[in-house]
Image 1 (cartoon, rainbow, N blue to C red):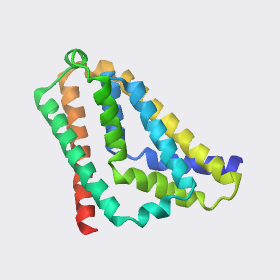
Image 2: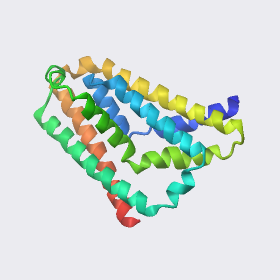
Image 3: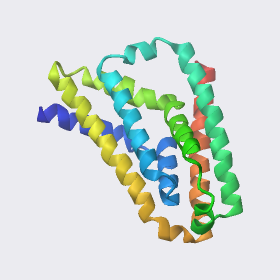
Length: 204
């Protein structure tokens, strides 16, 4: 029980912690205190579902549908380009914690954007369903279940810490320059991933 749990935690943590669109989004909303705990919860639930699918053996199905992967890649790229443009506009404007708190994004919009930045990125499926699912195949019976629990636990700890950590950084973001730097980094992250998704879709 302990060994597959530790392996799942380590593998899940190693893949989830990598800087990406989802992590950048969670951090930026945590700083803004914009429904940050709900955002973290949605990310955790999505990860748990996808990890469960991977452990159950759905990774092969994803890999056997290249057309589906292309559609998801291009759709995700469009969304990431759009969100990156929003971040760039915010960086040029130079917001502050006080002004942004008066213009909180609505709950409905936050839920949609969180689901979009999570589920429209094919890398999420590669990490959770394909890679973690493949690693879990080394274990049998209930040990595969414990591997999945370990991976989900890593996701829970990471997104909770990322969201709360963003909130703790809020005092720093009373300065406009801090917002400019954060939004510029978010834009760069979103656009770099979007370009890679387009390149992969066209290459496929």
